[in-house]
Length: 357
Ligand SMILES: [Zn+2]
Ligand SMILES: [Zn+2]
Image (cartoon, rainbow, N blue to C red; front, side):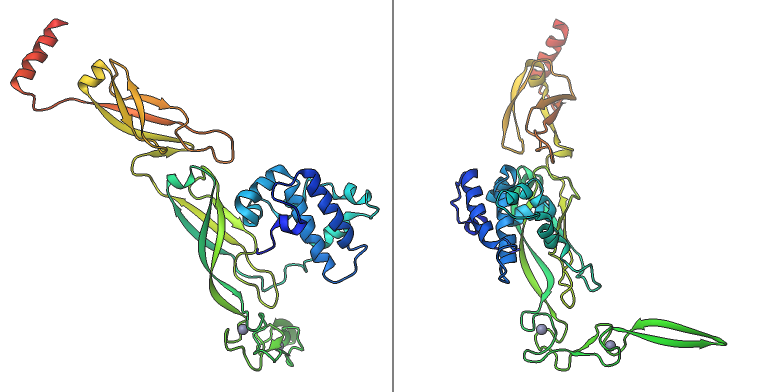
């Protein structure tokens, strides 16, 4: 996910206007458009500047990038979504270039089809409390995963040596077995025993990964926890799972959010519920109560004559609505405490009070 800063890529300031961003992209695109620039690095440069432009020219995506960086953008938008909404075709026709779709499909269709050996998907459980989801927040998690061995670049072979083509399967990874059953001959295709289906033999294995081509690393990964996330919500981070074999793509990382129950508040969607008590006299005469909310204590006015079990609503003190605008409420259910162990004098007063009605 590492990559240069988008503003740096386009050579503009962080507070650049849309026109400045467009102008910068136009200039760079003229230089690196694959129709014009045939140098090997042109395509990746062109992709880099196009991605930077696609994000910075869209208010919503730019905001996401400014707050959470590239990780935040990748987490919220798929690669297709990043480029969606930008009319590159019009852009390039204006510059005298042909269809952008060809380049575009090269970007996304150029990946050789899902080969076997794609890295495994991983799941990471992240424990959070209600306080952690009051606003969208960036968090760092440490994920143990298999990464391409840096010593042998994933080949599994000791530096200076290369894996040899397997002589048994001639590099295909498959062998045919002929089985005879009576008069029937059965031809079965099986994975090659010698090379384990890889088609290659590593004669002198890399000592850092013992020939596996991958090593386990604890990788710090930034994720964006959405405001008001539901318990069990799972975020998918493309390509952040285990490394693939022999250059196959990596798996994905799934981050499951476990929102722990709160010691005071029960949660229902974006609303929270609190149980509290007032004294009998306060309930009868009215009073002001300090009640906790997720955002600090507030004063709650208890009117005189409040009945046990009355529910008061404190607007906007619930959780942000997940994926929507607005905010839930806090509901406070007020019980009334009937005093025990009254003194003689108190009992007399209450008797008088009872007779007075
Ligand atoms: Zn290695
Ligand atoms: Zn083989």
